[in-house]
Image (cartoon, rainbow, N blue to C red; front, side, top):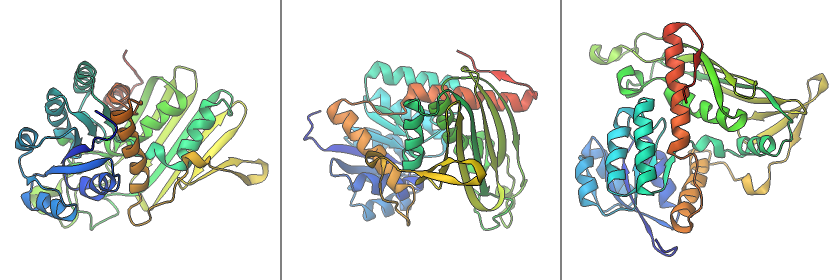
Length: 354
């Protein structure tokens, strides 16, 4: 594709897709939204009106057949990621898929192999890694400023079903549809572990569900079968260790990302601030490199880092530059997620298979 050619985008999914993906692509002049599909026609039509998209449908298979597109965006429940992504790849389309991009490692392997065979750009939307403080931490680690990474700690406190009575039931509470916070947020955290600590050798994990039912939901929608909290311990091939602790019983969201090395330590505070802990409990702020920094989007917090991902996809399609994480990295993430679930079932450490 010539650099001057507009990249035509077909979007599948309108919930997160309507809030993040559509505005992200609409604001980048290299892209043009040409079609949108949703399980509910009224949702597809709403997003189409908002972003002047000429085609809207409630049949994603029909959309793939009728809409001429260069890039397909898959922003649907996890159980639909595999069939949609496979269908798009079979047609030779570039694909951006939400995370996790598969239900299991077998599906992940198949999609990665197909994307490689088709020679198309394939990206998983781990946009959190683009937040300025996280990206700066990544650079610090890659440049060796921490020395040998020895320990990584990720703490994520959220208000889940057990504390938020107004939360409506969705596929996220259904285990069989790929719901649960290990996939929804844990996939992001595993992506960061691999980015900061390198390959993982084995994991130990405990999944939990604080809330067995969603308050005020209909009887058919009330039961929760997916996890809403977990603790994952990772042992890296380097010998370093990592801990991810997600607890959904908090009253307010709190996050902390810490990396400790043989030479230094850094902590992400609020995604836009990186600090170095000092003796006495104080912390020295580390300037964010200008090429990694951007202004927050307070009304739509994820739009700012997603816009970085959009520009990365443009450069990959038009200029042949790399885009990450691709499906090959997604396979590594999926291996850890599968191992974590197996560990929870067995109560034992689980080795990450090659």
